[in-house]
Image 1 (spheres, rainbow, N blue to C red):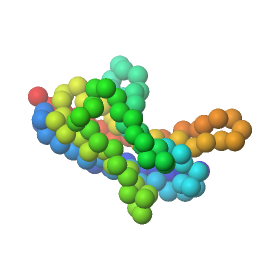
Image 2: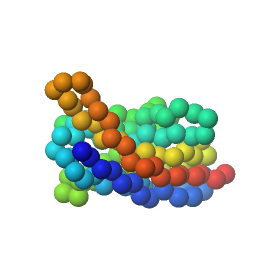
Image 3: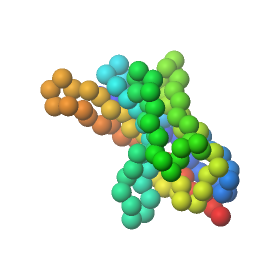
Image 4: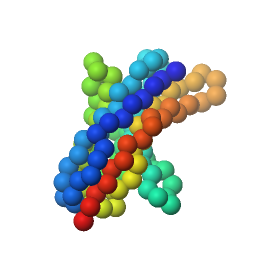
Length: 120
């Protein structure tokens, strides 16, 4: 079992910056990757950024060059540094942890979400 707790959301003006944090606990040794997803009203949840245990990263096209995902293995925490924020970045951001199962493929754990609002 993996528990995820997000923090760092809030209100920011367009062009500003914000950093989200996600602290993981539990059987974290089973986690193969972690990342951030977001969901805006009336929209499907979408991948924002992910980082694998082996170190490779993946970003949505809409945030490339503006957002950066990183991790602190000592604190078992991942971060999402968001720069040059746009109103269309407004959404609830969810932390994700993916584990590999020998039988059954993968399983996803989710945090409770943190609201990010970008004003014009």
